[in-house]
Length: 271
Image 1 (cartoon, rainbow, N blue to C red):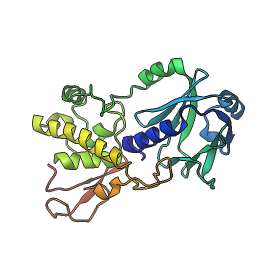
Image 2 (cartoon, rainbow, N blue to C red):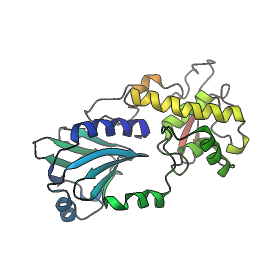
Image 3 (cartoon, one colour):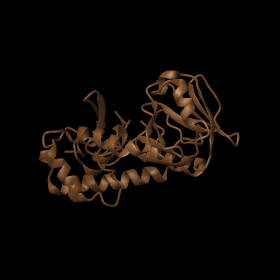
Image 4 (cartoon, one colour):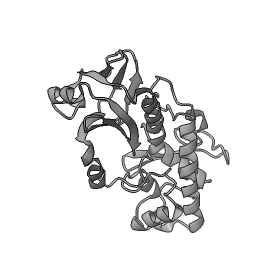
């Protein structure tokens, strides 16, 4: 958390609000958040104009006018709030020449901010091996099937959450995708029938798109760039509903541990 829909929501809001603004200075309150010395970071950002804000996987990308690009990862609890109020969890504040500001909050302090030469960005993502963007028009069923064949023995929920396979899907949406498709989270990729693969692929497109339209899921600490909660929480069918009745069959929703994370599923509806 946040996952693709949440990061995409913040990205769109920040691009609209910040493109063209000039950074007057960066106020660093927790140095470990910035993966560079404070002086280097502040000097690199001073008087830089934000050309655009976009996303790759769960990473926010701020393209600057000085040949540098700033990368931000919110990890578990990061927040980016436009003109937000400073709190004990505020670790970084970007001040702009028009007197507006952007704060970076992170209660659990796992998030980070990095600077990289813009020209080096393609090589960086290639090196990290991030998978395709699931909502791009050129990500087709045939591509999904090819990636599945490369990981035949991987459990399907872990497959969906592995950023080297597909970018941006995390715990919440993997649960929702598999419930929609009627597939048990412990199934190995090689056991999926063609119809099941198509249903999972369709669910990826459908659920992520719907979640973005509702500005994400505030199941934990996520807020959008204006400090508002996302509205997709009420649409969740399976995630976080352990012990409750399944919305389809009225059986009991179960939760198991899987690779250090949890997986919610209905034993009757998901085979």
